[in-house]
Length: 172
Image (cartoon, rainbow, N blue to C red; front, side, top):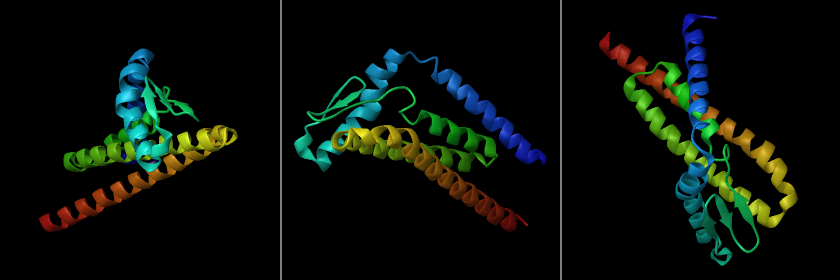
């Protein structure tokens, strides 16, 4: 294994661990009463109410609630794990500061939007057929999210490499 690959793996692994360590220092009460309702819940509820106004979805702390369904948002269901993984990979990649900032901002937005689609989708799954929730929540949605974020990371690394090659050839 070459040094650059080793450096990437080491930095990404250390950062990923550090992000998770810090995340688990945040009290559950802060997440469930402040972060989840304000950052995830209200946006998801507004999306559901826009798509299906008859649901009259509300948010109470970490729960998205209608007459037919209740979806609890708990630690780990907030997209944090995949965001930590992507952020650690972006920082470990060794791109220029400009590329890193762009990757971080676009990556954060991508993870947030994908997770919002997942939350809204899981709400509809619970409402339609609760028996489908465990496999969709545990297997299908997380796997799809990882593939989508890996695709984002691949596209970002190619853009960085292509852009840096163009810059190098202009300087030569």
